[in-house]
Length: 222
Ligand SMILES: O=C(O)c1cc(=O)[nH]c(=O)n1[C@@H]1O[C@H](COP(=O)(O)O)[C@@H](O)[C@H]1O
Image (cartoon, rainbow, N blue to C red; front, side):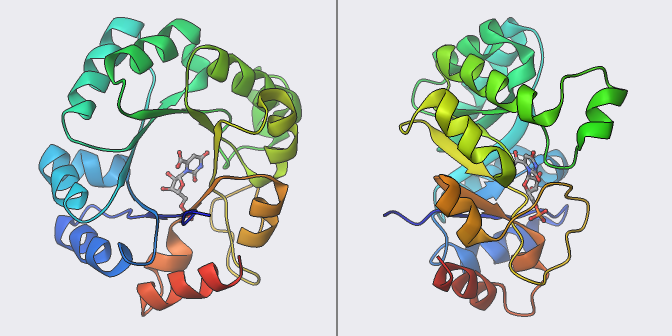
């Protein structure tokens, strides 16, 4: 099995992100550059991380198909391995990203792991356990390489999309770790057992005194 661990390098400080990339590239299958780091430091930081390991660029694009296609083409030029879009942008938007960046694995985010059923009611959407498999199927049918969901939905998602697509799972917390702003969490081993192909872990690694050791400890539980 290839290394399923994705370290989320969430900081507005480019030097910190590069330092984490140096420490964590040997321990993790992918390095995630997200909205905070990319908004603060942009494509030059993404390129610096690409030089250190395979990059998951998590921009969660959500716009009209033409605009998303343009952004996805620009991302493809950075040499990243994975890119997120929001599944709720719809099949035409997802297909436009896939077509514009054929060498990048397009991942569709279903329902953010910070949301629970009360939040879904507030925004007028179906409950999490209905919405997530529905959006996952829609995204894979539109050509996405995989989806992003919380650990609690992985089994239902696998039933909806089968064994082949990537299922990337944030909301991962080692036993006893703080949940922070995540509403739907599980341990790394639980998420893998449910059928996740990749695990996204941020603060439990980056807040540690020794991030590489924290990543190794998580890998040892898998
Ligand atoms: O697309 C993501 O990676 C993502 C989707 C989602 O629904 N929830 C979620 O937490 N994430 C990202 O996963 C990471 C989780 O970080 P920690 O909560 O610190 O482990 C962050 O970088 C989030 O942006």
